[in-house]
Length: 424
Image (cartoon, rainbow, N blue to C red):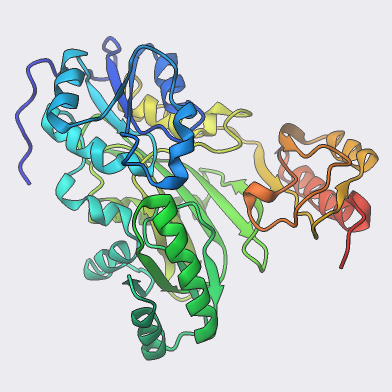
């Protein structure tokens, strides 16, 4: 698709020039991160909210996430929004969340600003289409099927006969937890749950069924510079999950190591296939012993992390803002020689409570750098099924051996009595 000519008021700041104005589309659930980081760099910010009827149901209660400032406008029509943004002298448009990707790309085109092709937005938002695009390009990917009918998913599974499958909302921005399945009955039940979650969280009922790739997974954060196709891997997190797919721990990879380099090379091959010429992306990649890295899903926007408050140097949003505006790609990558690990606690059953004394023991660990949150001791907990139901998240940092020892101590404390009143 050819790009529109530059809008008369569009300006294109380059690294080293004065700050400009950025429009952040649908900054839902980012804890005001995009506006905060661009403001730190001296940029003016305009938050573009989706109309009340447009966000999916799960997002409609997130209006409070929008910055309460005069420079917030509600998108009511393309011509009207373009006119208002051009009048503000907007130089850049970025998506603040998954629901904002399509609109941000269309606005960038109509304003004559850097952005990805709106004609291929579907490639950047659908897990199955992403896998097919990579396979067509000769790049390792995961066999997948996109379905809007459970019968189609079951026929595909019966045809390919993999040992196990992952069932999830097809929209890669959906936050609903994927399910691991082996039997047709499990696939059917998981498909129906994913279908409901997809309608509620993304407005689409599409579901993807993928071959399950066992082994480690990695979150690869990329950022784009002012020039099209100029990308950098800013950080990679190695993620471990339990057998029930609950988050266990995430570790920041050393950017000097061979694994970081191998994953970076793969990610930079994937981006152009997905049509990501500009801006930030987050790729979830599995490592397969026989095939090497394979993409599980991609999101074409910068995302916050619970570790951001502790260390802005690893913030995806901060790195994307620096790369796209005044600093370019030079200072966008995470630095530092110390190990960084994010750990999630896991309550074993409904009704148990945190032991205050043992919680203080964890709080005194020498590598504990930041407590993202702890549940109140004595308050009944839910069994941990996902990150939202975890009774605590914390960040450890220091020498790699010391961090590993404290992580193991946390798990030992959980086993011996952190959760009072636990039931089998």
